[in-house]
Image (tube, rainbow, N blue to C red; front, side, top):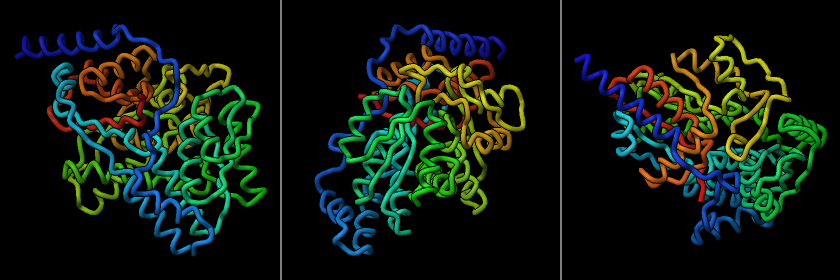
Length: 379
């Protein structure tokens, strides 16, 4: 038996080494890729009604809800049999959020908050972004007939800016980093009574509830909670929301357990993972000057994770874990997913998968169900 386990462990280590050493080409473009067309032609009537202020609020809300029900969420959950064989892990499922209209999980909270803004009588939504969230929010606002004000740090030049502009959003450039853009956006929301769609604000509960739908969708497919759910983290909102969904399912007797939650992020550049590794009770801000964005890690890095404390407590409560992934590792795993499973993912999306595979390499996991959330699509 020991010989068998040793052989399995050697196979797993060799597989990881293969991923780490894969000859991959650094991408020329950052950011996720939207669907083309973003909405199918049959939904244009609903989009026209929802965005036209000449219709009654009831008509607009009904049409907007139809768009959400038809196009947002309910993303695919597929078993990664080829990766399973290579890594020696059973059963591995991939929850692919790239199937959302603009290519990331951000569409879920963008559309939910625009629906909320419509109901509450707001005519303008503001948000800070480094790219993907701005693309989601600008499209969701355009589809709802809402004005959108997007704050972007001066130093960021993502190709998604053109999408944001094409959706009719107003872009405000801010000197400083993402955190400074969040502060400026939120301050303007208070000053001008705009809807604040930033993480950590008054609408955080809605964001967490909305990300909880990912847990419900996983349950619908598996009919129970998996042993582990691995997620890439930046602010921590997505992971905390998914946990909230599983907690609700467990309390209602729908599942036999709550999964261990696992976080992956960019090497040395995220307060959540750093706090977990150091066994801290709360996240501590990183020195802003140590944060270096690349075309790979940008969706993950933060010196201040806005919902980080909530995410960190989830890791402890579920007896999960967290680890850092290098750009090289994320690029290699993204290539492996494309070659072995036919999925074209944003490399940063693979940080959660890396965290799971690294753990399995060191401590082989028991046969069970494991789910990895992949948060963005690349063409």
